[in-house]
Amino acid sequence: ETCVAPEETASASTATTTTTMTPFKRAAGSSNPFHSGAGDILFPFEVERPPAGSLVDQEIEMLEAVLRQKKAKIALLEQLQGMVSLSEEMSGAQRLLLADQAPDIAAVVDSGGVIPDSSPRDFLQLVATIPPRVEDPATFVQLVAVGSRSVETQSDLPRAVALTVSPSGNCTVSTVTGSTLLETELGHSADILRVATAGTVDETMVLSLDAKGLMRTHKLLLTPTKSDKSDRDARRATKDDILSRYLHVKPQTSLTLDREFKLPSKGHQRQITDIGIARLGGPTYVLAADDEGGITAFYKNGTRKGRAIATTDEGGVLGLLATPSAVIFHSSRRFGFVSGKSLDVKAVLCEEAHNISSIAVDASS
Image (tube, rainbow, N blue to C red):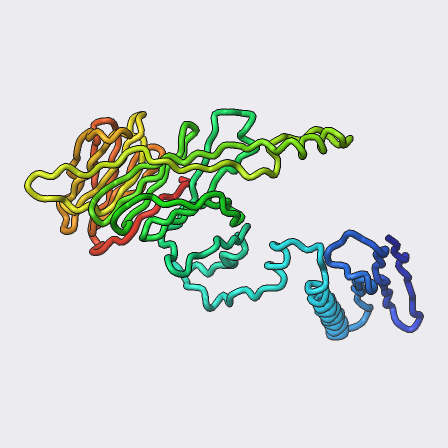
């Protein structure tokens, strides 16, 4: 990299001193992803000292200097725009930031008088496509955390997988980059209405509910797969550093049925409105909310623990949201919390709400 020293010129007729910076030259073969190698990257900025004249003359000179800087910036951006399509070393995030069109600020909804200065794409890290089923599209997509007690295999397994389920019961487990690990069936005889997941260090559970009120729990297991003998022999023959025998090998994935059960009926069958998996006071429970305002808890083996009345609003409990410390539920006008081994319920009335459709938790608070 070379840079010519600045040149200073002085004029006897005026008291103006100008310092001109020559173009910045970058050597060929540079690793800079914004340099095409076809020429110099221009930085023709000039720093001028105001002349000893009237205030109007000084203002004109300063505005002309600003104008030259703006024109130089436009030329640099145009050069950068041409390099975006030619650069092969640019990552997907850089190309997305520089090449794609950002939404207009005016098109973004103004919330509470605060105008946003960024778009959701500014925080986008990864875009992956899961192979779709045209005849049976997936309607449930969830990101499931995968844990392992073994320290040796923690770095060799994905931290999370994507689970997609269609109404007919087709289930696909994929990596977050879109690579398919497993395709299987959940085994329901009716259309699936709800899917819930929970991942811990001990196990990863998948809970499904069909139109007949049947709930089924499955265990999701990912096991590292050793490379074959030929790969191991080839690695021993090289002088490179020793690599894990699990590296770049697709893990063995299984989804096995654990239990299936229904809500107990007393004269009539309650309709399940939502399901969830949560830890209440230690053990892991399967939760089922119904249209009569109750929340029933089951042990993992399918044994019923108890039922708590959460609300008397019309339609009963409409949704469940499991968090590490409690379960949040909502009806059409209330939301509340279920916690503790005794299924303690605390509801809060939303005076101005008439049809709550969903709830969320701010993890930062």
